[in-house]
Each structure stands twice: as structure tokens, then as C-alpha cells.
Image 1 (cartoon, one colour):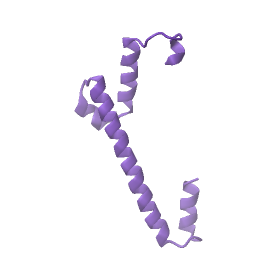
Image 2 (cartoon, rainbow, N blue to C red):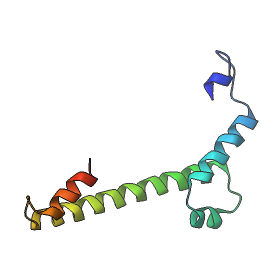
Image 3 (cartoon, rainbow, N blue to C red):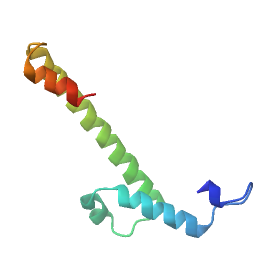
Image 4 (cartoon, rainbow, N blue to C red):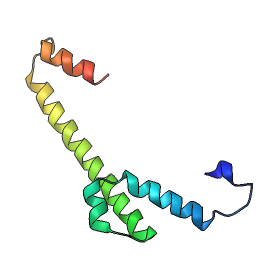
Length: 87
């Protein structure tokens, strides 16, 4: 976006709307439907909530993977598969 603007010029309303559209497209369909046509501030709040939920999911999956790995033999074929997937 900054490549389209010269040094000290301000971002246009059109550019803001374009960025809002791009942000909204990153949300899952279910979250977009529940929002309808949202204001920029509502969209930003929803995006923050979505990112927080993704962090929680990653933490949960990491914990589950750690628990799984602690129960298996380090040299087992299953452990090797998991290690290869994580590379």
C-alpha cells in the first residue's frame, strides 16, 4: 500500500475500504456472515478475536502433540512421521 503513496501523503478512503475488504476476506465465512456489513472498528475487533482464537487453537494443538509425543517411543515409525511433518 505504501508503494502507491508518495512520501507524506495520507491514505485515501478508497484504500481504507480496499484494506477493510482484504481483512474481511481473511475471516472464515461463518464469522463474516454473522457480521454483515460491519464498520472498520467492528471488523478490527472481530479480526483481533479471530487471531486470539487461532492462537488458542495452536496452543491446544501444541499441548496435544506434546502429550502424544511423550507417550510414544522416540524411535517408532509414528514418531518419525510426526517429526517429518513438523519440519
